[in-house]
Image 1 (cartoon, rainbow, N blue to C red):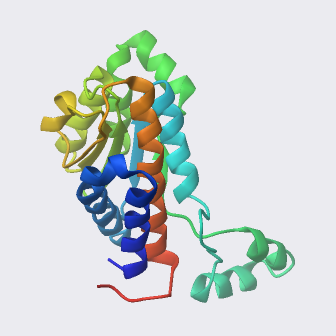
Image 2: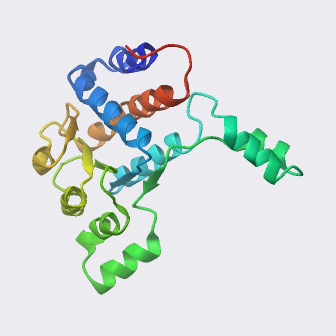
Length: 220
């Protein structure tokens, strides 16, 4: 991991001292995500309620520039210029390199159809079954760690050869047994857990972005 990425994770603890004990798990999550993206695999994210909003927030931080510029460059930039010279300037100015992350909470028609025709608590698991491939990663957010649709999705992720990163409250709930990386923040109160989850996934996304798009330092 780059020194500047380590600095980002250290900054999370400086700004939120209560998260000190989670730092090793957050670092492990960053390393897992970097391995995933480096191998041309994908990440899927899901949660319920406020955690569903957090899932979409994570997608927004990784699918576009978060803190660093991500201009299309190299062979891709040359190909873009050759194929679409008339609009190349506009595309080059505005498009950004992306890390492939998908929200499982956004498929309204699919989820409502599946919930109506089959069962609601397998709506995320169905998507993981359909989309997931060996080497992909599933990020789940559950304040209790016991949400049934999250547990089923995690089980099917392992069935597909995926790894699971879980953000939970202090106990980890049942996700403690299913997560490859468990980030259990120090609270048992739902809204406090969600408040802790924000700086955790901001640091995680910033560090992952830094690994791919910063040229300031080398791995340490």
